[in-house]
Length: 171
Image (tube, rainbow, N blue to C red):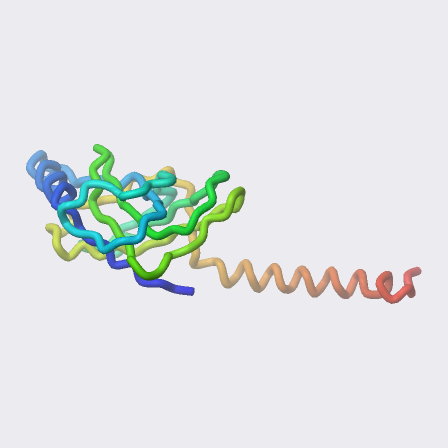
């Protein structure tokens, strides 16, 4: 399922970008936070209402001067419905947040890794004023279809190999 996430840019996030731009550098997105509160966000907010976990950005790239692709891996034993997402800068400022009062984005099960991938369009900020600082883990959804095809072929081969044993006709 592909759910569009249209985050609200916070006033605190805009101020952090202006401060960074004034120093000649771009603000860096370093973390994605997840929470379980459901509400309609506004620009005056400075944090998630009920943060449950915060994860470093694993990979990211600038798609255009105002669009950034981010990935992160939500791991650990926390278990909750993801109803809010926050994008945090290196200085700890919440740049943008998303929540929907009516529907959750995903479910984070205990002990199950949840791959997060977002394309952020930052039309309300100056071009090239925000970059991504990642761990360099290189999480990439572009190869998901290739991996699924490979996995399907491996399962089919295993089935052919085990079929005689399952039918009692093993050598």
